[in-house]
Length: 239
Image (tube, rainbow, N blue to C red; front, side):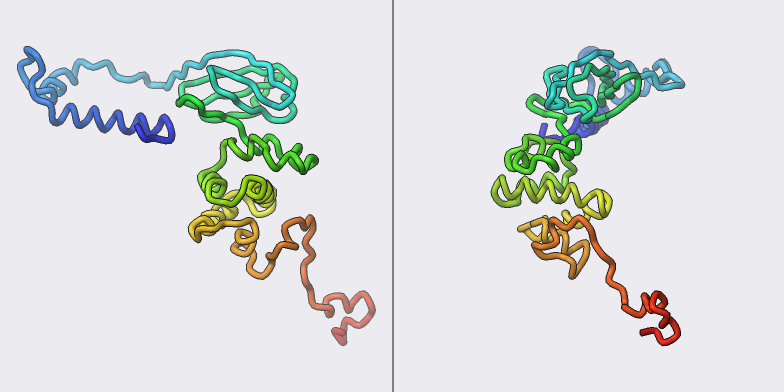
């Protein structure tokens, strides 16, 4: 199936079951069509439980110094405080929860297809910030799990070193403007065909951008000098 997640698989299976029930004739020695037999058997079906009961597999894992661990044949990342520690896992059908010292520290959807990972660049922002050279070929930036807009940016943006740097800067920018605004701006930039970090800056703050803005740590609000007149005793003149 050409799908991105288990939820799409379930939707396709449900649609296929409905099609089978509505369009299939008699099967074997049955006295009626599949749809007729389904209606005949419906009163005898056991109702679902009143309360959802979710069964999870409990396990433990040792997180490496690179914040990685393996579970059920897939590689996961863990938050930085878990590096080198043993963590607890509860794996449900569609998600995995991570626990450290009795507290849930992370949750993500459970991978289904071979080769999928659950490595999140957000877990590595501190290391990427203090080790600039590591950004050029950082696995979390190259192969990690990102929102669809940033994943599309990663695929259509220039060379790997440039892409990784710009992707890192976009994730830093997310702290400032929030994820919703950032992803909306990235989506617009992607639609233009040649997305860049600077272009996303322009979309978010027209007139702010340019290459010099990418490394700014602080932004000073422009104010009219008359606002400071009171400090000089000139509040009445406003000069």
